[in-house]
Amino acid sequence: MTDSKLSFYRLPLKDLNDLFQRHGLPESGPALLYNWHYKKKHTAPCVADLAKVSREFVETSFDFTLPSIQTVQESHDRTVKFLFALRDGFTVESVLIPFNNKYTLCLSSQVGCAMNCSFCHTGTQGLKRHLGTEEIIGQFIGAARWLSQARPGDDKILNVVFMGQGEPLHNFDAVKTAAEILLERRGLGLAPHKITISTAGHLPGLRRWKDEMPKVNIAVSLHSPLKEKRDQLIPLNRSYPIDEVVAFAEEIPEGRARFVTYEVLLIKDFNDSDEDARAIGRYLTGRKAFISLIPFNPFPGTNYQRPEMERVEHFKRLLDHYRIPTVIRKTKGDEILAACGQLNTRFGVTRPLTPG
Ligand code: SAH
Image 1 (tube, rainbow, N blue to C red):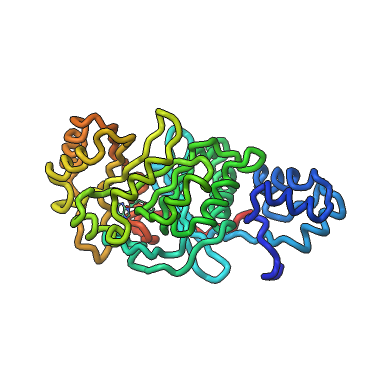
Image 2 (image 1 turned 135 degrees about the horizontal axis):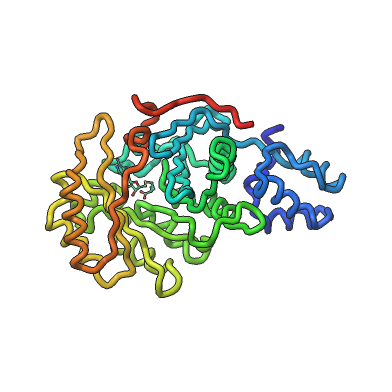
């Protein structure tokens, strides 16, 4: 393995096909490789059915290194948090969230984050670097391999959400390619619209989305439509106003039934009043909107607090008057997830694991 080799996990099937064609290699190769590395999730280079000439090409051209699982934490509700070690010593986390015997996988797109949102623990670290496509896909493969070993028969990852560390649209190219690979039928084969990318309102990425991003869902972190409050929560709002963000986001969902998910983080005595609920209701009336209410997750050093559950439920009832579908995002695995970016907790079971 040398650094001059291209990571295999950076290539959508189409690009792999082009590469094989350019080198005059048998055209069956890319599908075999996809089957081996993505469907079967082998991490050792594929040698089995490849023609000798293809095998030599693969061995000299590609690197198959993926992030390794450093720790796994499991909570009582079966949520699993992984800490992945990257080549340069940085780490990122991913979370498997169970529902109805299936899982949603929450992926990170960057080490740290440049957005500096006032309520987010990751933001306090600043941006260390973007993740490469292979480091995003590697989180999926690592989690899937762990699941099939640790929970055989209960190991289906149905949904993927880009809601871990980082602003996915700030790392547009790597996230876009990762989405293509996740959706590839002959590979990881996630169903269309089972992938959701959440953004703090990164306009440059939203402008590119319609023409470039494959068919995935969009979620916008709204939190408040009121400029003064949103400016305080998401500094990005000062350069990329919410009205423009929403205008671009609304262009994305396809078909009448499709909608934009608006995440509304609720912070006690900051944006959880009746007035705040009405402002959101008025702002989203007439839009293709679905609201996901997220009670604030406290972390050390923050001055914000989580509202009482009664307040959150009252907030939802106020929104119901506007006939906007609203769910309260249930905090799963909170004893291991206490906050975004917080890795060690009193209750989580941490054990090192070497992927086999
Ligand atoms: N950068 C993207 C995706 C990462 S955050 C975005 O901003 O959308 C995913 C979701 O978690 C966002 O809606 C974010 O606002 C929310 N979030 C961040 N910190 C949180 C906290 N301390 N408690 C609860 N939700 C939080």
